[in-house]
Amino acid sequence: MTDFIDANFPREVEFLKALVRVPSDNPPGDCARHAAVAATELERLGFKVERHRVPDDVVKKHGMASATNLVIRERFGTAKGPVIALNAHGDVVPPGEGWTHDPYGAEEKAGAIYGRGAAVSKSDFATYAFALLALKDAPGGLDGTIELHLTYDEEVGGYTGPKWLLDQKISKPDYAISAGFSYAIVTAHNGVLHLEITVRGKQAHAAMPETGADALEAANAILTTLYAERKRIARAKSKTSGVGSPKLTVGLISGGFATNVVPDRVVMRLDRRLIPEESGAKVEKALASLIRKAGARKGIKVDVSRVILAEPLKPRKGIEGMVAALQRHARKELGVAIKPTGVPLYTDARHYSAAGIPTVLYGAGPRSIIEANAHSANEHVKLSDLKAATKIVAAALRDLLKAD
Image (tube, rainbow, N blue to C red):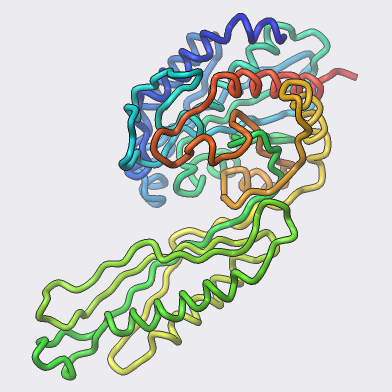
């Protein structure tokens, strides 16, 4: 199996480059073209690819333009063994500024591939596909099913990807492995709450501001309260290694329309990171109450609405076998002991766990996510890490699918 991966690694590299070269920025979330290219490339590798187009009303509800989920199912032996889903997402954050490499050039330099999505998580399209090919090349002694779930909405919450596939009963796996970011085997991560705050007041001439209701003044009071709340929650520490403290960031603000007019409307969006010990619903209720109280004054109305709520991923009973298999082969390939940990991010993995499916994250990546410049300029994946992850995943899957 290792020989197969070594011999076919040039093909794996070219496969990944082909995926990086096709933009799939989300927003705006027009990802159907990337899915079409990925499906064609996967079929060239010999896979039968199911294309599950998400209805327009569903993708638009979640702020996207188009999405097609790809599913591959490979059965081994009697197929009575476990069904293991491998999930990676093909949508990416926009490139932004500061690149010295073409974000869509898939340039190979100094043993790495550069480009948006090279690390998160188009690399795991390649990791999982070629790990599965290695199993198909030597299927003896295996019993069960491996599924690839290649989806396109992780950057906006995973609701038209993994959650949609599970809700539509397109798949019902026994276990799931989701895209990783580093050498770590991730068993927990934080959640996120995004809120939109709309402060409405009353216009007035700047020469007579007392005749209006200043929405920006009320918004300023809200901001002051939120920054005090950020300091307060920073004192809380998660018991889960790697997760840290809750976070709060006001990321967007807009309002007013003329310099000489009292602003009658200000809109803000905030990001509240949730540690595994927290309940997103309870945090939302308390935070909305805090915001409304801070903005309360004559002539002002404050609306708080949810944009997204992703509950944290918590370790679920049943992950032990996956963790042990990945640890065993990671130590062999990487020469270091890998411990289960948490990360201060949120991912699609939570949808599998919420459906009762034991779930971990593991895939191609360096020793830390920072080293890969994930979501930053010059994002890249080292070829050595890509090959190692492919071998580790393939070997772990072989252990998990061994026939009795």
